[in-house]
Each structure stands twice: as C-alpha cells, then as structure tokens.
Image (cartoon, rainbow, N blue to C red; front, side, top):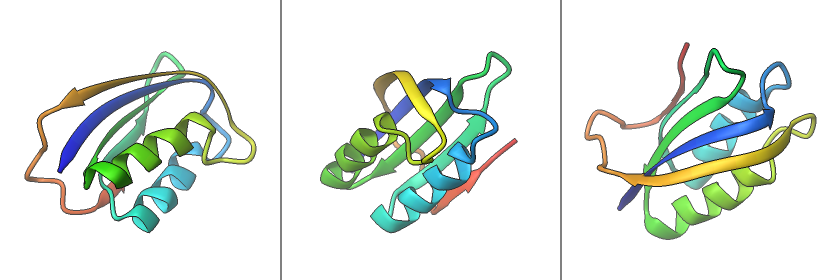
Length: 91
C-alpha cells in the first residue's frame, strides 16, 4: 500500500472535479479525501495498492471531470492514514 498527497491546479473548482474524483477513487478502491482549497486548487490524499494509486494519479492529471482542466499536479508520498477506510469529499 502507498499513500500520496496531490495538489491540483487549473480549472478544478465549480466543474464537478471533487465528485468525479470520488467516483474514480471508488472504482479503483482508493481510500482518502478530496477538498477544495481557498487558493482555487484541489487537495487530495489517496491511498491503496500501488498500481491503483498510480492509475488514480494518471487519471487525476487528465481531469476526472470532463469540464475540468488540470494545469499542474504536485504529487508527494505520505504515510498511509489508518483512519481512511473509504474515499470522501470533505469541506
């Protein structure tokens, strides 16, 4: 299992990005969170099997929302969070 933090920049708020990210995470059996940030970016923590997390990262970079546009995604490894049992949209 690996865990990552992703900060996504671009047209990622007001376009269903968080909810499409949750659908993607649920399909890939990824646990974690996604939330909007005050600076207009989206913050994600995701954890799961390595291959699933790598697929998740690749698809987030392409924008899971058809109306969204990702200009930049900063990805870093973090320690897995045992509290994450499913993927949630937070506020």
